[in-house]
Image 1 (cartoon, rainbow, N blue to C red):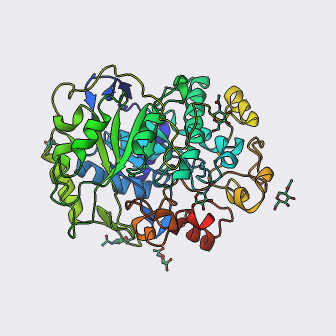
Image 2 (image 1 turned 120 degrees about the horizontal axis):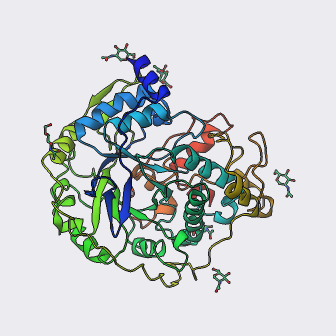
Length: 470
Ligand SMILES: *[C@@H]1O[C@H](CO)[C@@H](O)[C@H](O)[C@H]1NC(C)=O
Ligand SMILES: *[C@@H]1O[C@H](CO)[C@@H](O)[C@H](O)[C@H]1NC(C)=O
Ligand SMILES: *[C@@H]1O[C@H](CO)[C@@H](O)[C@H](O)[C@H]1NC(C)=O
Ligand SMILES: *[C@@H]1O[C@H](CO)[C@@H](O)[C@H](O)[C@H]1NC(C)=O
Ligand SMILES: *[C@@H]1O[C@H](CO)[C@@H](O)[C@H](O)[C@H]1NC(C)=O
Ligand SMILES: *[C@@H]1O[C@H](CO)[C@@H](O)[C@H](O)[C@H]1NC(C)=O
């Protein structure tokens, strides 16, 4: 069975490939049928006996889970981080065969834009990492989109200063795909569930004269529907109003509040795929597939990797199955205007103008010759140089050194799943004072790479959502 699957993938027998998903107006479309496409997804980053791994590079993991995805009736999964040096063909093929698209966050804990030292973290080596991830995945038609960043901007006001760097990454990814003659895979940003600046964030990534720097899709992480709520009570109605007129597809890049009761009924599903929402929203992804310390799982994985479904799994499957997509175009908007850039407001939105950082000069070669060999997660000293040394020591134009270089200076884990504040961490994190709870992500150590990422140090960083660095 395993052999047959591997063989199938390696010789690329003629298999029907999913048609690419395209953006038109504020909606997604199936490029073959012309039907509107609504994301019916889950967030997918199962650990392997406690260790964060690339689930798309291990067929014992992905082939196990694709069967559950099919039972849930999914058409999309979001993966927060991968190891770009590994082979993903078997898993990508299995997803394709199951009718499932991928939304991929291109960052890793070791290659991300840092909230607190964004200039330092935006460097050629960082770009080599994420652009080579684009190289690896661009060939798959079932890649729905890439996220250039996740929750880099949160309710710490000074994190808005990182926004121009993330937007520069959007620009670089789009220009890189064009330079390499790849399909123009949609590039998005996944925004934190924070009331203080989420609308400014949405506007910022969809404003300005530089079309390349504007995102193609917006993910919003949203935990507002808790228990037996409603369109109005949850705040969904207010969000539909606020986002009406936004010119791009918006979807929940995480949803599924777990603060009420022992299991989640997912009563929001019927509303998410109703015409109350679909003029503005295009579905969403439930956080998350596997049960982890923060209790958002649909399935429990034991130390041997055996999976058991939890009540949330049955509830979600039943709700999705009872909910059809709206007929026709779902009330989408064909041609809204781009957003106006948010105005500078001290303590709220501290970005003065449209100016973006320039591409680090050492990265320009990628656009001519490609980003080179994917270096996986073994990319060197990462963000530690941004903090431990003076910033001049970690210039933003460092050369894409070899993987053995000790002067690598890729950036922080602040936008990665392993670093965002979790609900369990929030009480201990000064960064989250006054904040809404952001129940995302893992308090765990990323250890699929081989470099010296001291686990105790990483844990400290991760659990406290980078505030420890302040
Ligand atoms: C799972 O991890 C635990 C603790 O790290 C270890 O003791 C155990 O041997 C692992 N189990 C398997 C099957 O690898
Ligand atoms: C769990 O996984 C182990 C190792 O793959 C296997 O031997 C065992 O039969 C599995 N147990 C169950 C209950 O499926
Ligand atoms: C619900 O499940 C049935 C049986 O598997 C299937 O035929 C139907 O298409 C599903 N409906 C939805 C909306 O997924
Ligand atoms: C834009 O703002 C930055 C600081 O945020 C400033 O350095 C730069 O000069 C401004 N550019 C323009 C054209 O106003
Ligand atoms: C950069 O940091 C390293 C490690 O701390 C140090 O050895 C080196 O002297 C620094 N270089 C400069 C130019 O500051
Ligand atoms: C952001 O604010 C925090 C808390 O006030 C502070 O510790 C940190 O140094 C600030 N970061 C920057 C880049 O200003």
